[in-house]
Amino acid sequence: MSIFGSLNISASGLSAERMRMDVISSNLANANTTRTEEGGPYRRQEIIFTPFTEQFAGAKARAAAQAVGVRVAGVVPDQTPLRQIYDPGHPDADDNGYVALPNVNVVTEMVDMISASRSYEANATAFQTAKQMAQKALDIGR
Amino acid sequence: MISKLIFDNTSLLLEKAASGASRRQDVIAGNLANVNTPGYIRRDISFKDQLASAIKNNATEGPAERASITRTVAKAFMDSSMPLRLDGNNVDIDMEMATLAENNIEYAAYTRLLSDKIGIMRTVIKGR
Image (cartoon, rainbow over all chains, first blue to last red):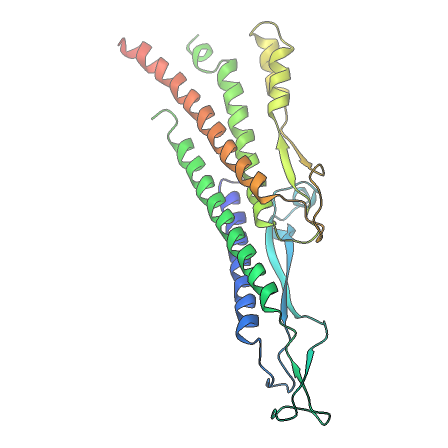
């Protein structure tokens, strides 16, 4: 792997955690959205991470113990049941007076947010370290 | 004769160590990038043990030791010794950060020793 391999891996981690933050922000902003374009309330979005094994093409990259980055496999709706609140006066209440609210748990989202922030910092530190090591290598014999 | 001064076993050893530490940096970066990936098992590179035994098994510094050092290969392996979390991931972010810092310092030490070796050459050539 070239010296930029490590930088690319850390960059993939940074961008994946940032995308995770976007999804968390979207969930928090829409925690009480009862009316979406497709009809029905907002469903919590979940992000799926997977190791980025195609980053380095060739048979060697497919060997098990390689340094691999991360990529986002997709953003999928969370299938846990929606919250049902009894509120007949609500404009989006159904015939029985129940309103379906999004299945977003604000506490869970906050914890995810802290985790994403910490992982982002860790990846940024790894990036800095790789840069420092490359610079040290350039200084040999100076 | 000059080449024996510069390209001796110590330089080779330092070069192997520095390249092992550089590969280890890549693998640690990969572990950190995948700290939230479900089912990801931590990877690591082992090279220090191989280099240490190459030196230990050769009593004197000579062509035999040189061949031993040249033959060492840094080995990448999956580290399953860490406990799994609920999502199947076993990367401990704190341990990984500590290993990152430690590896950085070791790499700086290897490159510094290489620089100092060249510095000795320079002092000898300059005569002061």
